[in-house]
Image (cartoon, rainbow, N blue to C red):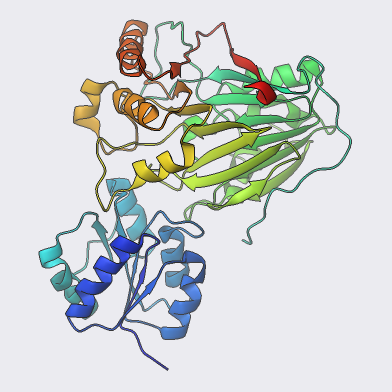
Length: 439
C-alpha cells in the first residue's frame, strides 16, 4: 500500500494544490483530500505523520476533524495543523484546545512554509498551549392548524430583535429597540424562528396567544450568548401541546445537545422547571435539507469565530439568506474566498438578513474580528444583485443618529442598483408580508 507523509484536507482545489505542490517539491509524499467526509477514513488508512486541514469546508469542518484525530487512540499521535483564512485569535486558541499542534493563517508565507512544516513534523516547532450521528430535518406530515391571517401564497417576516450585545447594557432608548437577534418567518402552515435572542420572548407570547402553530422550528446559528439567551423564556416550551424542533450546528467544544441541555434542563437554566413541550434536535452540516413541503434549506459555514451557520431558505420560491454573525471582508484573495462563496449562494436572492455591526470608521480598527462593515455589506449586495437587505446585529453602543447616518451612506451605495434597505423601528415589527408566488 502506498504511504503518505502528509494528508491535506481542503475543498478549494487551487489552495489545496498549491500547498501540495510546495510540500511535494520538498520531497514529502502528499495526499490531497477534497472531501472532508472522507478525510478521517483516509487518515486511518494511511496514518500520515501530519494532517493539514482547512476550517470551513462542506461536510465536517476542520475543527471537528482535529478533535476526531486527537481523541482517537489510533490517530492521536498524528500531528495536526489547522490552515485557514478564518484566522481569528479565538479560532487559534480553539484549535489548540482541541489538540492541534499548530495554526497557520492564510495567506501563508510561501517562502518559509516548507521549513515550518519540517520543524513541526520533527517536533522542533510547536505553539504554546492555550491559556453524534447527523440527522436531517424531515417533513412532518401531521395535521397542522392554519394561520388564516396569511393567505396561502404569502409569507410574513417579522423582526423581534436586531441588536447585538456589548460589554454593558445600554441605558438609552432606541427607536430600533434593544432586543438581541430574533426573526420569525410565517406561512399559513409553518413558523420558523431565526435565533433565540431576547426578542424570542415576545414572539413566544404571540405564538401562544394566536394559537396558529403547534409545530415550531427554531434555527440557531451558533451558541454565542446573544443568539441563544432568550431560549429558556420561549413560552411554547411550557405547554405539552407544542412540538419545538431546534436546528443548529455541532461545535467541537459544545454540541447542540449540550447547549440545549445547559439552557433548558440543567441547574444553570434560568427557568425553574424543564420544558413540557416535545423537543426534537437536528444537527446540521453544510448541506441541503427539506424542512417541510414549502420550505427547503441549504447551509454554509460563516466567517465568524466558533462554528457558525448561515441559513439559505427557499420558501415557496422566495429566497432568504440569514447571516447575523458573518464578516464579509474588504477584499478577497486566493486564500480568502468567503465573499465569492457567499455571493454565489445568495446571488439575486429576494432578501439577505446580515450582520451590520460596524460603520466604515469603526471597521478600520476592528476588522477581521468576525463582524461586517455596513458599507462593505452594501457593496456586496449591489455586486450580487440581492433585492432587499435587512441590517441585523446592530452595534449596541451605536445611538440612533449614528445608525441613521450609516443607513444613509449605504442607501447612496445602493441608489442605482434597485436594492432596498429594510430597517425596522421597534414598534413596526413586521418587515413585510409578500406573495411568494407573485414576487
